[in-house]
Length: 163
Image (cartoon, rainbow, N blue to C red; front, side):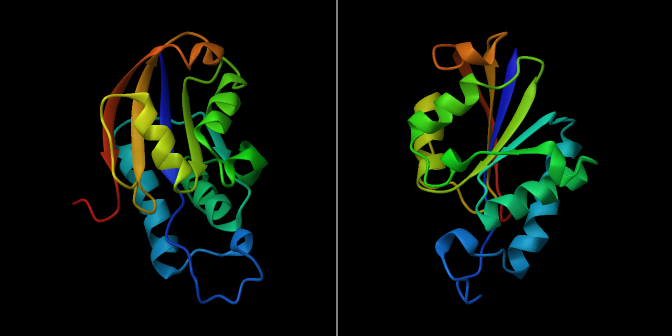
């Protein structure tokens, strides 16, 4: 049994003067929400062993904040260009390549792709995964290469304003 944790990047700043969408940083709320949401996962005894992220600044910083709560560093995060602006097919391809030693994987990406992908996986659907929102599921498979056709079960969704 595998577990997949989908995480939309934390709230980003539109006022930063960033040269491009790719370079937009987290705003103050995003910087506060990311470690808080990571701690909520830890409190649920969810021990992420693999972190995979879009290299866009806001996703990268969100992944780093989560990794730090898990006592990991930036070097422990796998960055995949395909997660920036990803369509569901990109998620499937990336997941199929995950090392089978990984039991609980967190993927950090962007809307609308992450919401579209989450909505393909189980009967549970969401209109819009909020910033720093989490969508968690279990996967009845021993190999990540079997993910696409494996039975999946929605576990929970969480986001910063859900208290």
